[in-house]
Length: 329
Image (cartoon, rainbow, N blue to C red; front, side, top):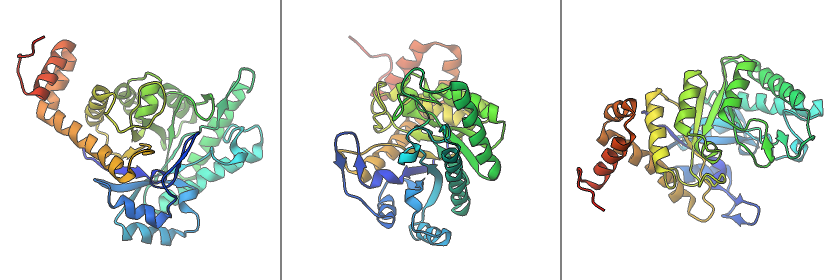
């Protein structure tokens, strides 16, 4: 697989959770300078609007050129501002829905201007917290209409929808891969697809590799965010540190489906150094890729097709510890 590694700019500044703040705020030029210190990073995922405020298109392109960086994707934030707290694309206020669509359109303009041609959005303010809170059918129609309007605005820019089960909403309107794929089909436009976040898949007990396969078969796999967790919350840990076998299978299947997009680190380095943490995320890709190469991708795929799972794990672990059939109790 051709590895193109990108990092989300927001993780290079001040970070906040419900209890504390971590690291110091940084300007955009300071963040871009840090990206240059991260192993393997050649791209950034910039968040609209905060990562673009105060810059013209040409100024932004000059900054990218100065640091020899590309923009993998523009992440449109439709959750942070107070006006979106009761919903953005599904707000009961048509004016707010129109503002949310305008954010997407502006993000698409920026993506085109900086050569990304890809916008990703995770509509985390859209959903519900309680039973009887929203009209589900009406909210879904608004979601389809709003995303469809944005996608039609710029057919040259792909609009990728990231799913997540919860946070900040107790129930987000797009909680899993199947719902997003259904949404894509309802919108019915070729430039609408899915962002697969490995951590979001893990904590709702999806198998990331299976979701990648489904999205790729549908022609809707546009972007991949990488991280890890304990399947109980979206902890945004370094990929492969907890669910190693899922991570290995994820990379195998990404190669299998011919994915040639970016791998974007969505790791939250609260208590660790951001540059070291995001460098470790890149190395996690290299380690897994090397392991697959050493084992033999075609060999592994053939064993999977034979469905002899015990032999698969014996062979993988024998290679990892450097023995062949010598394990003993």
